[in-house]
Length: 358
Image (cartoon, rainbow, N blue to C red; front, side, top):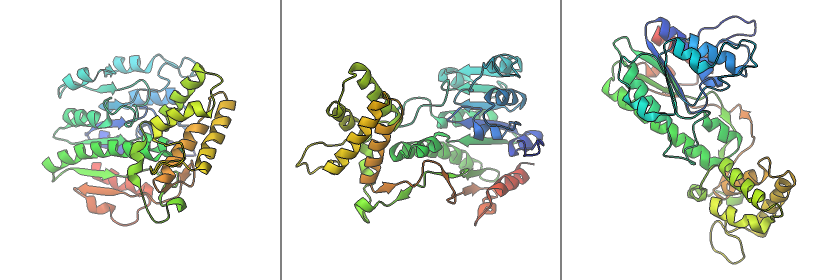
């Protein structure tokens, strides 16, 4: 919250706090990343993570949960005052790092909490579905924050954006499912408290220009083919790098078993499998492999080529690896939900919510 003139701005979470409500900030990425920090931070740059960590501690919000605090002990920061976790503890926060049992043992009235499920961002849902999930943090946050004066919670499925930058549809869908599980937790609470609970689901922007429709599959979609992808493209890139470390002379033939294992691709002529590769598709992957190997296994050339190929076989395509200007769907359920009907300017969402929490 700082405008171009350097003036301090007030977020909806701060309005809620100053109205006597309890406040929770939850995210699957780091707690001082752009979106969570927008609700308590006051800095010209989203990249000043240590300073935003100081703002987190000073916010006096009641619950922070999900990923860890980025650059929490950055001694190079001009404003360095000590480890952010330590400063938070001094400020009265109960700090629980990577201990879900300790988090689940907390009871209402325990005071302010910072609880992390990872040092950085939470794992991708596709890579580690049994690891701490954002829905787990929301369930506990609601239990701890529920009170007569009410509460405000901002929950972000932050890694959806990351995998859309990578144009990785299978991993993106698993992250959306992860967010959906958290929305279900919110709606469970709303059903029990229908008269005074509002649940709003929105996004700050679209990423990647994701479309259902690809010329290679004409007018047919084969979304089920994405199930052949076993991990995120990022995790595959790590496995491929290990292959190169084991065998610096590895050729494309050495990479084929890995591509089959992670993406379900079938190599060789005559196969009727929908994931059988044509000569041209095989050539695309081999070209990407050569580029990737030339770069010493760094970068995502092979991973991106494999993900793109599977996406296309599923009938999906992307236009960009950046943010787009596509409209974002906003849905709302509960008290005051009607205020979110029709086309709304994104900044008006904050204005509407501020009126509700004053």
